[in-house]
Length: 143
Image (cartoon, rainbow, N blue to C red; front, side, top):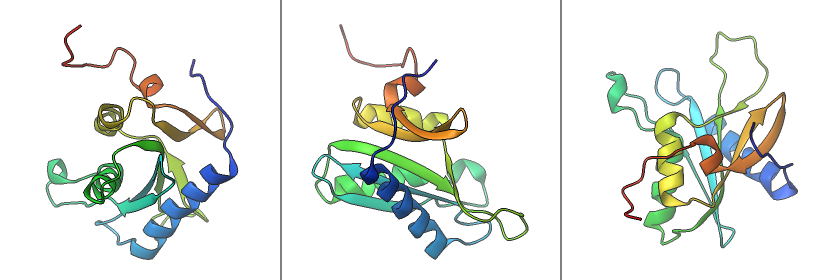
């Protein structure tokens, strides 16, 4: 069972930033996921995932958002969220929060063990620590 916490106003704003970036940049078969990361200084960096014809070459939105942040000198993360955009043929009205994939869970925890992740859990939006999503994480640290 995850140790989850309720969202605060700034968390809902982060979700809106992720929604905004994918709603503006959605392209069927190219960009379906948007992500936003808030750094410890309060800066927000958002990005879309980049799909490729060969699936193994795709890059997740969370990774690009983290990369944008680091490229701008922001290396400490507070919270991250990813949202999926509906496809044009789906009967859904709006974006929804999605959990990070396994590779993103590794990446998020590698770059910030204290980073919170916003997820849908038991039917509600909550946040938890990235390490909770990756129990017994692989590490190269020597004890």
